Length: 417
Ligand code: GDP
Ligand code: IMO
Ligand code: MG
Image (cartoon, rainbow, N blue to C red; front, side, top):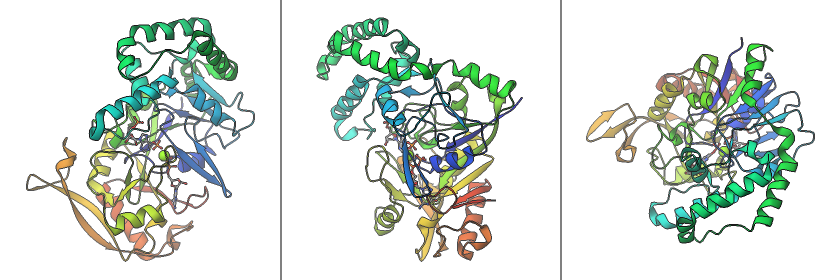
């Protein structure tokens, strides 16, 4: 009986999960995605070559690892087919759950229309139809990946769905596709994806229970974007925490082994919603510039600020993190001083927890000495003294040990402690 290890984002996404999953995948037999959709954007650099992944698990660059897209994912066939073109011979290396829900082009139209209607209350979604496809799933009116195997029947169901929702869709100026057009599209999806569709839960059980395989579960987004525990309503529509990996793949809590939380050495957020340690001044702009903080999926500039220890402690407890991977330490190179948000001021009092109305807190900072030249360092003892000190501070304030430090986008510029 093997346990599955988990990689989970513990800030607002884009922590560098892709880089770590790619690096660790070399030691795993299987890498599985359990939630989210093509709102995720994971950038991986290997020997100067850049790969952008959205739905395919970040284990794909290890030719030996099997990659699984679990039932908890909302899958855009169009998006994954395009993504698959970057790789040769994925047959036998990529499997998609027949229970994953379909994210079809009308979901993106609904997402974008709803955002427009919200005006200045918009969430700032990726516009990829994530919320609407998860709503359809929970509303029990969604369509699943396995249904792609019978395009005629699925086509009829989708047209029925349009007929039932016509008054609502009319308001959003969304119209039913013509039957021939829709059927041709679905036939195309079947032709491209049928070899990959299977019961991935059975696969995973066999891998863990019989074949003694090493399995890595790759989270998308981050804890502060979790539908229950994040900054609702400014969140994504899935369970981004480690527990979500169980429901999103059909395994149980006892199947989970080590949990590694991925954090940047500072903080970023894309889209709207509270972000206590955001720096709207020169420092934030500098972090964005040095960290190349533009979204992989939408190209939007990410909001930047300092490391938030309160949010990290919260996320570490929620996920059961055994350790942290501290990413992008090199981005802090050249700052005379670096700040860490160690507590919040809330209703005139100092607090050390994340309240439900996070927009009403003010960060309380501690300042530490900066450093230069951490980029590309591969051994802890080769880090500048104040960078070593900063890592110790993070461990202390986050109450979680740091097991991995990353000092560049490249796979091997990584310190394993
Ligand atoms: P993910 O969504 O969590 O997989 O993260 P993204 O890929 O969206 O964003 C992280 C970005 O930081 C990517 O462009 C990575 O190539 C880059 N990156 C990852 N680790 C490091 C690091 O240690 N240093 C620097 N400078 N960049 C990094
Ligand atoms: P990765 O996996 C950062 C954000 C969006 C928006 C909110 C809701 O690369 O870390 P959605 O389209 O999901 O309904 O948008 O969530 N968001 C992300 N932010 N990284 C991501 O994924 C994200 N996926 C969604 O910007 O604020
Ligand atoms: Mg990303």
